[in-house]
Amino acid sequence: MTEKDTYKTIETSTEAVLFKDKNSKFYGFAFPVQNENEIKQQIEDIKKKHNTARHWCYAYQLGAETFSFRANDDGEPNNSAGMPIYGQIQSFDVTNILIVIVRYFGGIKLGVSGLINAYKTTAQLTLEASKIVEKTINVEFCIKFDYKNMNKVMRAIKENNITITNQKLELNCNIYISVRKKDATSIFDIFNNLFEIKITKIN
Image (cartoon, rainbow, N blue to C red):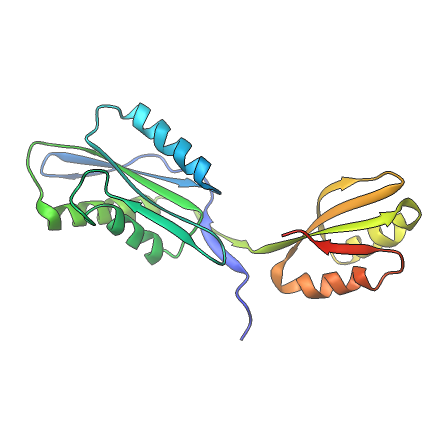
């Protein structure tokens, strides 16, 4: 069995998606996120923009291989908002994503089953409106060498179509590369076998 080295996420933030039920309005937003600081910032921004709303419920998932997630009902009955949103994140098999649903109460209570349906449907519509893309899980390496070995290193990089993410080219050179996980071992071996070249994994 080949090891999975791809994951799905959304390319960009989505425009607001509106779902209505018994005068309540539910606005769905999806954001690509990399860490909890970004998540916090997006939630704060949404609360500022929709400061007259009643609830700002959300769910997120982070990670490409090991996942962390959170679901928040923000004052709605337990598990009536955050988990239905998270269920759609799982259903669409996406990660590094935050979905926030803003609710404006319409005066008529929906009941727990009505709320679950509303949050689930809004999250589904939001994901359907998002551009989902597949990305590769990459491994980062640092290649260290003396300047005199530059040609040797650059030839290996070119021959293997390797992406350089950063470089410091002085007497002692450091080149940082990013390679797809399934190719990581073979790329490591190529540089490890070159004379006077040192390669180390950095993530």
